Amino acid sequence: MPAYDLVIKGGTVIDGLQTPRFKADVGIADGRVASIGRISSTDGAEVVDASGKVVAPGVVDLHTHYDSQVFWDPWCTMSGWHGVTSVVIGNCGFGFAPCKPEDRDRTMLSLSRNEAVPIKTMRAGMPWDWETFPQFLDSVDRTPKGVNVMSLVPLAPMYTYVAGVDNAKAYRVTDEQLETMCALLIEAMEVGGCGFSAQIAGEVGNVQLDYDGTPMVTDCMTEREIVAFSRAMGSMGRGVAQLTGELEVAALMARESGRPIIWNALLADGALNQHGRSDYSHRDKLKELVHLNEQEGLRVFAQALTTNFVSEFTLEDYNLADTIPCWKEACLGTVEEKTVKFADPVRRAAMKEIHEERGGLFGAGYDLTEIKINWISSDVPNAQDLKERYEGFTIGEVATREHKHEIDAFLDVAVAGQLRIGFATPMLVTPPASMKEIATSPFALPGVSDGGAHTKFVTTARYPTELLGYWVREHEIMTLEEAHWRLSYYPAMAVGLRGRGCLAEGTPADVIVYDPETIDSTAQERVWDYPAGEWRLIQKAVGYDRTIVNGTTTFINGECTGDTPGKLLRHGTD
Image (cartoon, rainbow, N blue to C red; front, side, top):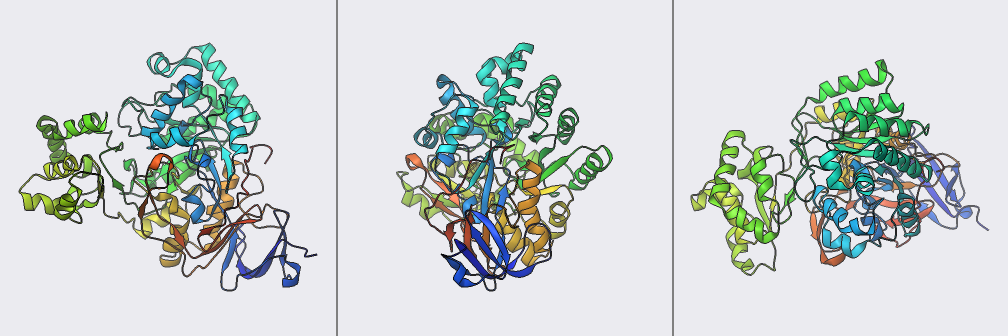
């Protein structure tokens, strides 16, 4: 009888621990790496020829929003296509537990705007067989998974559960309510939550708002609340918090908890993410991170945006223009209401004023004249005529041809297509020297994948492939040894994910086998594969020969095997 379930022969092993690469065979048995060395092919029930390939640990993705998608997509694609074998959900304070039955739709409405997860899809695809956070984890545990899943404890649903979302926004919470929420946080961590998460972005300048355009309930957390949750987590003697907000707040959380904090997000100067242009110098933030870690003894990590950024969008459900009041107001409401607003000359005048004052798309970022009209829904009554007149042209070209202001050209096209016309920004490329500075910072974790969120706008969950193919192979910003450490072991260590992120005898067999010369992302495409017939933008990958989760192969040459060996990873026990 073979000694191993799977033998990977003759590959170049990069173990995720910054060990210099070496050529060896890897034997897997009972879901774990059983041997690394010279192994006979006859000892494997299955043998994979990895000659000329890299054998490395699967990627650990710390920033995703697969909290709903995991229930209808076991492999959490796009991440599953790009070498990710473990994901962390529950980021930014957004999630679905605890949640009373009467608050379910309100909770989904929030996620439909702040993370742009289609509401029809959530209503159709989620089992909602829980109320408490422990029950939610049990539900994730039961559902088939093609990746491993660990969860933060998001604070927004906790406020709704204990105080009521509108009351908490208006009056914050009483001491008794805050004490109850801290007890719920401890209860959630006791069953496997890995810490808490929050978006604390304030009332002004925030682009991840609630469905009604108001700030999320966590955005206006007081120092009293932040300190209470931090101390509650610290009382557990383990755990990590994830913050979307100011670095100074992350430092406060680290001081009060004595625990690591993962801060979002570190962007290179001039870079865009789905939330707009960064408004700080990355060099200043890198200096602050060094001071916090080396001088103050606080453990603060930064999630670094390591993908070149492009966005596609329609005005049917766009939510990332909310820093500009006139755009925010126009983007709220039903499609019919928004269509009227976008056609309104008075509102357009305000938009033009902002445009002339600040420039760029929605007053920041991309040149509006360079935005391309790239998709027109076929269910628009006049689709064919619109395709012939507009598809493939830029807003600048349309404005010139039709003798219009670019705002008028942009909105006239959108309104003519009942807001179901797709626009595409040009690719914003970060200079390699700037990317090297943020990606190789001692305290940076590559990612900000946002997998499962903003799926009609961005495809940043491709970040592992872009790091290995574009930044390492083409621009040599770091070695492959460092890249795999940053993609796997370092994030696993940062979040307290035991035994993952490296290839060593006895560790769980989360493994990728890929061709370093051909690994790449495919072209962006639109697919209708969500529940309730909703669509999303995706980019698949090439160059991955095999992805293995807990010893079982989930993808071969990009094709899913259908196996679901993923596990719920409960913090403190896994």
